[in-house]
Image 1: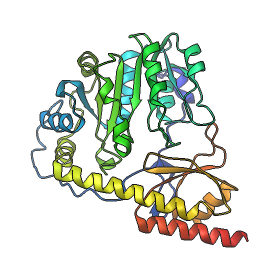
Image 2: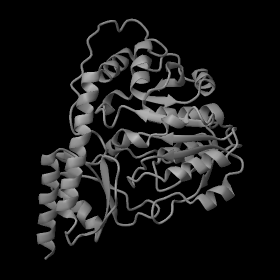
Image 3: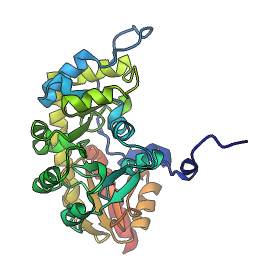
Length: 354
């Protein structure tokens, strides 16, 4: 039988999400989710009707939250759909190039492979900052640039001056896409204020992290009106289910935003508590500074630490296979009790080693 798929599809490697890896435990600190359940509930029973293409109420609510006009916002099925939609809209398979800066979020690479787009890879510097010198050398003929800020899995913010320098050096035909999935934990560092200055700037947002709504898959693309209107031509006809938009609208009410901000402050407290407790452990080599809801840690004998935590029901994320992250494990910040559980298990590992 004749193959119906392009040759490159047969060698694709799928994105390994925290759930698809299949590790089982009782404390899950591996997916950078909020540890608290969002109590917003779905109330309607009008599921026999198709939803709006773009919920007017949700656009209005996110406009109020983000302080940009409704017509500069596109609602998507999580930031992941935004990543894919931009490639599908602006790149020609087998012809165009995208650029990104590992170690970073794997979906940029996965989507490029799916659409047979060439990847221009410029690794970050040892301090996890952008290698502007090499970016400048390789920027020609790049259609899209993906930059995760704060970066995942390193947790750091890139220097603002470096991001601005990229925006000033690229032509208007090249889009810089800043993935702000974790920006709610460092909202003052958002690039939303630059949208009016740069016509080729695109920002990705999500309700999956700080808002504690990973399960509804709701994200946003923020850009200028022209780019949003082009993306609308490619987006599916009914992209956001009615229950999703309803829950998202409620989550963006002032009382819930106030609750989210309190949760963010608690995450910072829990992160500070966790770091202070384990920084002197003999198995810990280095704890990298993080401005997100997770922390990257370099361990001595990281594989043994990882397996020991799994054996005790603590599930974290192994990042040691990624470029420049040998022996590194990423830990999402959970509740204070989950942090204490992790500390206690690491203490047991320390005792086992002595």
